[in-house]
Image (cartoon, rainbow, N blue to C red):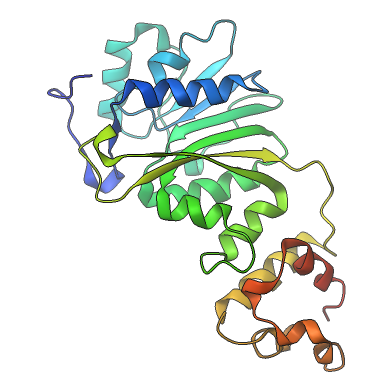
Length: 254
C-alpha cells in the first residue's frame, strides 16, 4: 500500500496498517463468527477495508472522522459509496438495526474510550476484534493477581470473554508507532450480571482500584457498613479479587 498522497494527522493517532498478512489474519478471525452485520471503526487508508468489502452478502459500514480520509476512501474504493459514515465514532448512534460485529485498527489515543462505547452497546455487539496498543490489550485481558489487572480488566470481563489473539510488530504500520500492538477479541458473556446493580458494580470497582495499594477495608470503607468491613475479603487488595468477587460484594453495599 502506498501512502504518498495521504496526510498523517498526529492529533487523530493515525498509524496505518500496511501488512497484508496481518489484515488477512484479522479477517480470518472475523470469519469465525458470528458475522451478520459489520462496522469498521477508523478505516484510515483502507488497508483492512479492502478485505472487508470483499465479504459478500455482508451488510458493512465504516465510520471515519477524518474528512480527507473519507475522500480518499471514496476515490480509492468506489464500492464503499453509501457505506461510509463521516462521523466521530464516540458520538454516533448504533449504525444498524439488530446485532452487529465491530472491527478496527483503533487510534491508540482514544482506544479506551472506544472500548467503553462498545460496553455501552454490548446488547447489540456480537463480537469485537480490535487492534490496541499492546500494553492496553494486556490490561484488558489481565486476570486477578496480575499487576496490570485493573478497572478496565474487570469492567470489560464482566460483560465479555476476552481473547488475546496475536501481537503485531511496529514495522507493520506506517509510520511505525513507538509501541507494540496486539489484537484481541471480545465475545459477549451469556450469563447475566450477578451484581446488585450495574451502577453499584461500576462504583465499587472504580473506588477499589482508585487506591489499589490499600486494602479494600480502607479503599472502599465509605461504601459498606462497619460490620461488613470486618469480613476477611476486605483484608485483600483490589487486584486480588475476581470479577465475580466484585459482583458478589455489591449485594452488601450500603
